[in-house]
Length: 151
Image 1 (tube, helix red, strand yellow):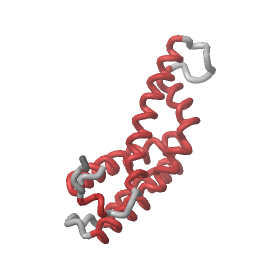
Image 2 (cartoon, one colour; image 1 turned 180 degrees about the vertical axis):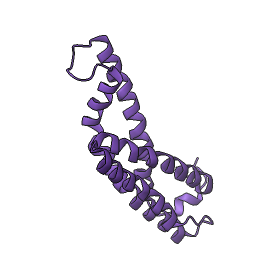
Image 3 (spheres, one colour; image 1 turned 135 degrees about the vertical axis):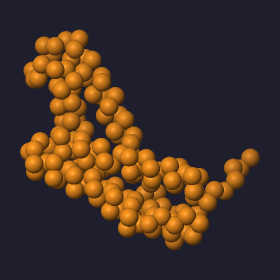
Image 4 (tube, rainbow, N blue to C red; image 1 turned 120 degrees about the vertical axis):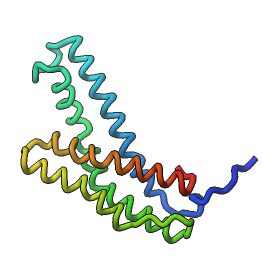
């Protein structure tokens, strides 16, 4: 039995995969931080670093997740722009503003750069930029789902 065709099926865009990756990667990072903090608290002499296991876990996890965070922060505005353009072309009835969503997505990039310049702490800059990107990605995906049924 075939499922009914959703209005999102007419949209010829898979850019929303990049948008969905933002909260998924952030969630994975939170789990990683919790796991590393737990491991460090069980064996404090395991790694040299700050005395606080959570702070140490944040630093260790950013060594692994820093590059994916940076890539997703930069790609998010482009992905949102391209996806909204495809949605508008497909005439699905939902007309999201490509410029507005892309500009809001750029806030993550701007915050990353500004925090990086002011604090000279790349980890903090990436977390700040990502913290702004996650709510946008979740909001956009929710609206996309409500209006198109996909994802």
